[in-house]
Image (cartoon, rainbow, N blue to C red; front, side, top):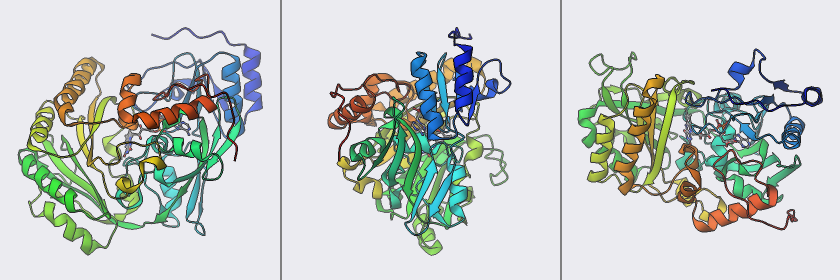
Length: 472
Ligand code: FAD
């Protein structure tokens, strides 16, 4: 149902459009139908205005307009958040897709990127000089939401999470003020941005540490599901002794009708070990032998440009599918956990549902807890239960599958990763952050957004701070 549209003063909307470099999109503009949508097809919201911003000044103007007109604010980076925080009903969407500058500085090994980049746009530009940072497994994912929530990616066991490589950010606050976060300018805000999500302001620019990465060994090995126990056993052993050059993931999914998949496996439930090795090819082969020796039905691990691996899984995550996710961290793949996982796999909505087990550890685990808001750095694996389907009549059964899978696996799970969470409320937030971290996040929120203007996110409630600005 289309929500009631707030009465907006047409002259004020026209004045906003005249003030900014970007666009103001509203119903019934032709662009509105596409502009209101986000990646998750389950999210069907009708904002009053969508402001596509081209500069921090545009963002500030949009924030001020929303506040003056009593509109909720949704901030959209790549629009991939499964809970749909990148849009809203009857409010104002700040769409950052016009902020896609990428400037790589080879001298300082840093890249400064606009807050609306996707990993595809960032990595494509960065590949020209062969310098990258940890990014998402699907290239259409936004750099903004991904990094602010933590950011698990193929380079993380060598170089840390995306948020660990965030060195500085320019942020438009809830009052429309432009502030900077770095180790010298408001380090507490930088700490909060490293894992605390989009709570603290609209990030218009982010500076990352980047590393030489060009050809990697990447791909996956695929097995029929009947071999899942031995494959997961080998995966567990591999993860226990892996070098930091390797980041791997086990996935249970329906084998696609792709040329590399043997005909007899296509359309059937399968298990894959996917990964990225950033060392020498011989070292990669030696580590991957533990899986290869099992005799996979398909093996497409090969040397390839890093950017090729970064888009290898894009076809598995098209925009518009209907998604419902549940997630948690786990320490071991013990037999009870594997039984529960395979039980969930056998009931999974086909062909789009997936179960992902991300290998953690390495550099992620070595960052001190106090250096970032990201929690659960000691986890061995992150589990993501991905309910996905296309037919709206399957909404109920798809959601029920993800919830039942979570209940079945919950005895082995601990904590929550904000980037894989749905709109699960404050209770679940305390699974993402320990008490000390949450109190610290609330204090930063209280200082920068005491009225909780930016609340369409995994929301941290502001703690009254007396309104003192940060001072060096
Ligand atoms: P959006 O929906 O645009 O935003 C998400 C949240 O971040 C919102 O609260 C928004 O307000 C806030 N936000 C976004 N940009 C900014 C900004 N510039 N300033 C302030 N707030 C901002 N996660 C991983 O860790 N590793 C993966 O490999 C991975 N792969 C994924 C693949 C797919 C297909 C999808 C759908 C998700 C994946 N994720 C992954 C999860 C992903 O990190 C989250 O969905 C994340 O929220 C996406 O960020 P976004 O900018 O695209 O989302």
